[in-house]
Image (cartoon, rainbow, N blue to C red; front, side, top):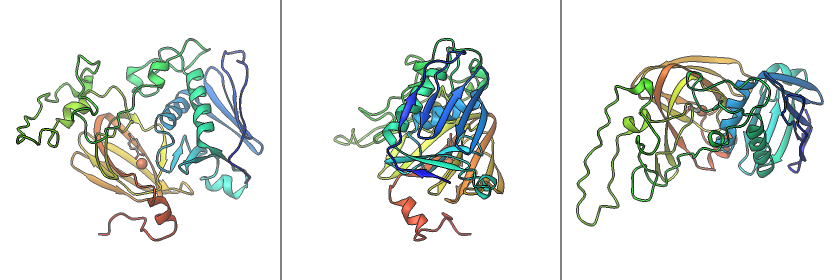
Length: 329
Ligand code: PHB
Ligand code: FE
């Protein structure tokens, strides 16, 4: 394994015969053609279907590298150190590690952020929305034709206190471009009445979370809808496959609000299989901090992801002062 310092160079090349630019980050080289994304580094090469690659890249960009590890698949991914990001190939893959074919570049966050955003913009064709379910978007394939910057840069909901409060993230409606999704046609759309005591109008609020989620235009994209200090409620609507395999750096709680998700749970560092978890409405799952997981949703479903965003947690866990299991039974 080789590790460079954080000041790696980034470079974009002229478009290839298919119209797509290629990108360098340190010793990694990214390119695409009509069907595939290719990654090359000094000791290896890797290929992914470009639609899966773009769905993962879209989330890594929109979430600014998220919590811990975003695996695009079993080989390629990023690990967030909140200021720098490790870009890796094979680092969390037992076979690559044992063969010493893995590679890591530690990159200042603004550099990898800008390069990933540029690659996402260049490689996304008109008509393909990496956040949409496969049934609700067009094809990622073919020679370059147009772009979809509006989808790539869409607003990420991050409430300061709670959705619907004055000055905070607004409710969704037909009028602001958020129709009810085809799979949530049966979700009631009434809103709670709030009768605050005089003087408390700014302190008391309430909204219909099911109605709010039924109008989400995207999949596998947690929104921050309420905040209590470091505790974030991040519900999301899921359909088809979570486009990343998330490697935790903290525990996460999942509350399944509707329908069903099948979770594949693996050891975070080696990829060894650990569990298959099927969650049904009302089920609560505590995901430990030493795993990685990927979800499969046969029908559009509502999931509440509950995060603690404290920057202290990764160190408390890696130093052994915090348990990896969030709960003991
Ligand atoms: C997760 O990795 O915990 C995660 C990510 C996106 C989702 C749901 C869960 O939509
Ligand atoms: Fe996760």
